Structures are given as C-alpha cells and as structure tokens.
Length: 313
Ligand SMILES: [Fe+2]
Image (cartoon, rainbow, N blue to C red; front, side, top):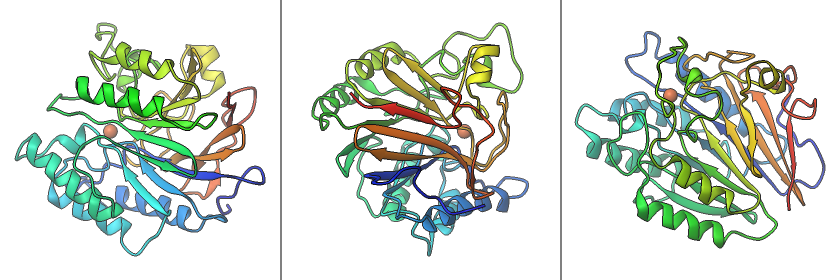
C-alpha cells in the first residue's frame, strides 16, 4: 500500500483513469460500485503529487438517469481527486427510460456539475500541460456501439493536426476499435463462435477512425466497454490479445471495469485503472489497484515490465 507517486523525477503531467464504474441504484448492493469509485477518487486525492486530471472512459452510470447521476455526484462530493475531472460518455450513460435525448441532457448536466466544465456536446477536448486530451462520444442512439458522425470525425482530424508537436495526444472513447483487444471473443464472459466481427467494438466507423488516429504521431487511444480484465504480454503470447496493444505506432489501451466485474483477464479483479505519467520525451502508463492502493506489478505489460513506457517521436 502507498500513495500514487511518479516513477521518475520531473513529471510534466499525471492522469488517473478508470472506466465502467457502473453506478446503479438497481445494483443488488448499490454501495459496492459507489465504494470502488469513491476509493479511486480518494486514492487520486491523496497522491504524492497533485493529479492533473481524473478521467473516466464511460459507463460512469448503468442507466444514465437522474438517480444514478445523483449517486455518482455523491461519490465525487467533498473530494478533489485532481485539478480537473473529465467524463467520457459510455453506451450505458445514453440509456435512460425517457430516451436517448433525456439521457444526453442528464449526462451533460451531471458532467458539468461534477467537473465544473461546461459541455454542450458528447465530444470535447482540452490541453493540459502541453498534452492534448480528446474525448469522443456517440451522437445518436446507437445501442452498444457508437456513431461519431462526419462532423465529429472531421473535428478529430483538426484537433490532432493542431496538437502540440512532440507531445502525447490522449484520445478517450468508450468503445475500442473493432476486433482489437480480443474482440469479439472478449465481448462477454461466454465466448460464442458466431459473433459478428464488429461485436463489442465501436461499429461502422472503426476503420475510418483508426486511419485518422494512425495518421498522427504519439497517439494513445483509451477504451473500456468490454469489461475485459487486465491482460499483459503473457496473454498476448498465449491468446493473441492484451489490454495494451500497438498498431502502426498507435497505442491502444483497454481498461477493465472498475466496479462491474471482469472476464478474460489475467486478473479479473475490480478496482483497477491506470495512472498515466508524462515526462519529456516519454509516457509511462501503470495499472493500479485503487482499492488496494498499490500499483499492479504482477502482470507484465510490455518488454517484461509491469508498465508501459513509450518514447515520443
Ligand atoms: Fe460497461
């Protein structure tokens, strides 16, 4: 057990990232997901060096209604996990008994109340200590997938083009690109041989999005959605997939569910997310058990190390 502290000296930016928190009033024990979220927030708040942003990669709630968001707000209350808070939208956040439009309105209102940042769209960006952060989100009722649409994809291209040179760009989208991180096998606990190849992924725009992301340097794409437990190099060798993958220079990172159960992982434990540390010329991403307040060192992520270290170009 110990506080979050940098791996190296002279850290330029630090982000704590969790996904699939699934706050839910209809959970058999609603206090369980609330407690996992709260513990991650407190762990970030107690970090040795102030965290620049606390970020979720979607499905903060299970139902996207006022009751769920009020419960989420309670977790964030009286707690300063980071200088800024950013909440990516997930498919569950768009599901509300009153329909998609009502869910989006609830998400925008709640995200603003939690983060203090005014948002009028499901996608937005920010620059923190020279690093560009881009948050993508569906613009229509699209089931488990996401529809970004031409306007958002063009905006993404421009955001990447204008990102500071030699600095990392962090892109957050609830759904991973189709077929990555073991999809569609890893979409659910139960493997089904007849799953469509795009199941569990972002959907029809996957390759268009991949091409845009790959046309820029130093891009890190974070997703959640499948609730795949943390998988490293050993799983990559054995089964061909991992939570940390690389494709034509694009880093793909899939986060386990913080509080809703996981499967297909080398560890299926909950309470896990990542800490991102930015240094001059490199990025370090370390899995952390926020509930146990320690870095996860059992799983080999890349180059036989229990973390991912990427040199920037
Ligand atoms: Fe989820």
